[in-house]
Length: 105
Image (cartoon, rainbow, N blue to C red; front, side, top):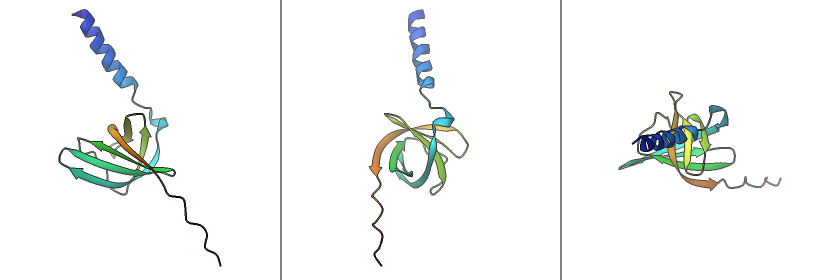
């Protein structure tokens, strides 16, 4: 019984230890929110790439707003409009196309 309780406490502490610190987040623009039965999909634009994530919960975010995100192997963490760190499932990374070549005069 005690061993099982210790394993549960250890597992919970591991979950909390994996949440990134606020200073690890970087700016992004929330460019799109989609909803399907069971999930809300969020698309973010950063200076380098576009990223997608999903959540079973609707988060306090406004399309077109600036947010801060942090990506790990499986999760995209973000800071919502209430200043809370939210965990979403990281779904996709898309490279931005290169800028068009300068026009010749």
